[in-house]
Amino acid sequence: EAEPLLRDAQRVWRAASAPSFVAFGKSQLGRLAARSGRFDEALELLQSARADYVNDGEQAEVLETDARIAECLVLGGSSSDALTAAGEALGRTSSDAAVLPQVPLLQRVRGLALAQLGDVQGALSALEASLAGAQARHARHEVAWTLHALNHVRRAAGLGPLDAAMSAEQSALFGQLGIVAVAEPRG
Image (tube, rainbow, N blue to C red; front, top):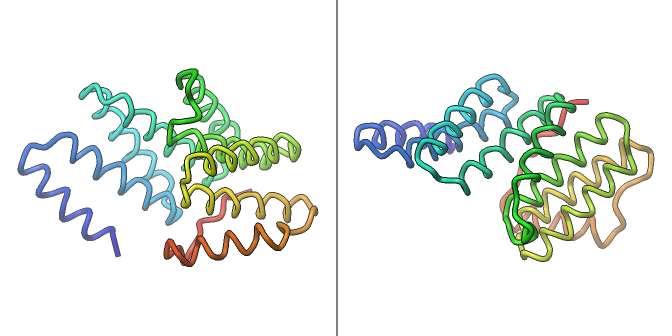
């Protein structure tokens, strides 16, 4: 539902010569494309948005877009590239990284990439760090996505599902946030 609206908004933002809004639109369209399985299109849009943000000197948006690029890579099954991208982005965060909104997402990407590469313990550790960061920030959407990722990795590794309380929390958050479809990572 959001895609046609974003494309219409993009036309308005381009006509208004609003480069930050155009970059934002590209980033959002890239996220939609990634979650729809259109990974090449997503990477093109996200990389273009990143270049626009770099040109505008919007470092927070560059980091956010780098996190979305890493997420796109892991969703598409490019595990090593996703792990590298997430690590590089995390390496550019400040010593006060726990307060940055992108850190739980980057840790979640690391966890999923490590799981795809067969490092279950590393994956669970990264996902637990993601969950702790999301909970500390009271970022309900990040908590929901990380609980989902934890469940995905646990099941794939034969460890069984999340415990009942965590599973109920994820379901409740998905309901509250209106999340009805989830893009599962390849591999």
